[in-house]
Length: 75
Image 1 (cartoon, helix red, strand yellow):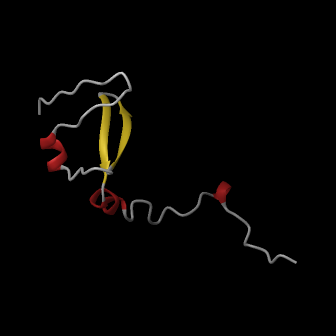
Image 2: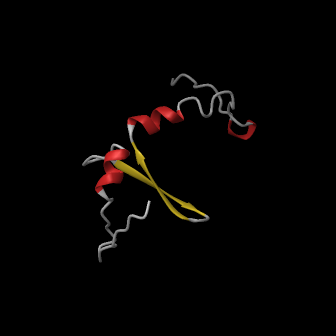
Image 3: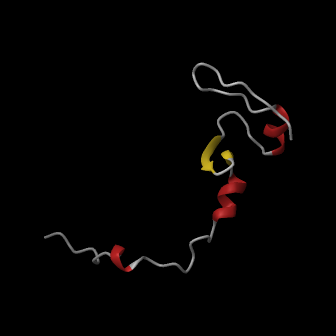
């Protein structure tokens, strides 16, 4: 890859245009920062990313210590 950016005094940086285009990052696109062993992973939160997460927790259910009582009617 080899792209670089400089962090401003406000902690901001510019994502290089070729990466924005490749990953469909447009003005207003949210990004997720993840601390990983090798450094910081920056991932765009796009429709494609959200779609890739669909079903990731399927079949896991609610842990025993998190089970809740059924809603009770308010008198």
